[in-house]
Image 1 (spheres, one colour):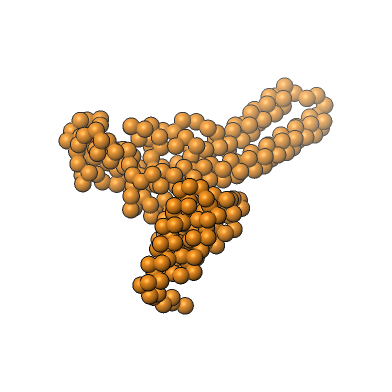
Image 2 (image 1 turned 90 degrees about the horizontal axis):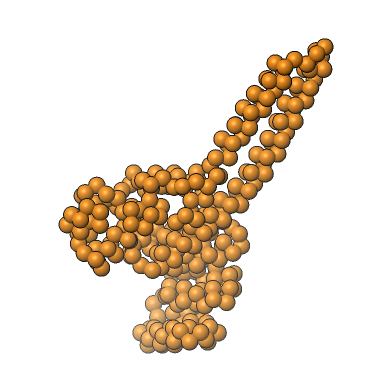
Length: 281
């Protein structure tokens, strides 16, 4: 049902209550801030920021069910609210709903990166997303390792029994049979080592890392010189250090940056296959 516009006097009163809530929040008077935002919501239920501000208060108190409720209401009003997607993602992760939580964090990260790529909130969202992705990988890799070990032990036992039965049929066990058993066992172990490689921590390839931070790319951009950097880091360099390429020292302006979609896709493929790399960023 579409909400009707409220009178200007009511909207003004609601905004004053929001400002009161902000003041209480800064003084860490969370209960008073919640009351102020609740009054603002009662007066103007169609204002997104009143919902997300109250959700932030509930987040401080770790009242995750209420965080989720306010964020879902906020997203009904504005499906592109970065803060609502972000806090909803955190609330779902608290319930160990990794798939839903990560989906919301990814949405918040994409929206935030589009509006303000160098904003501190984008960095905060990325850190939460990377942590969640790593936890998801850690949980999945532990299960995979357990299954692989069980399967490996079962295969080794079956191979040993096969050779025992084979040898028992022969009058004398030959050295060749023992050698065959050893070769097959080594081959079997090599197969399982290969299967576990994706979950083995190594070094992220250099071409997937920013030349300034040495961290894996999140939002890579390429310069006219052909060098790829992390967008936020390069923008910070251009704004604070100078209008030139950090590596080649060639003159460089923000409008010359082009998203490196090939590297971005390569990073995503690598992270999908090596979830442990999220901890490296």
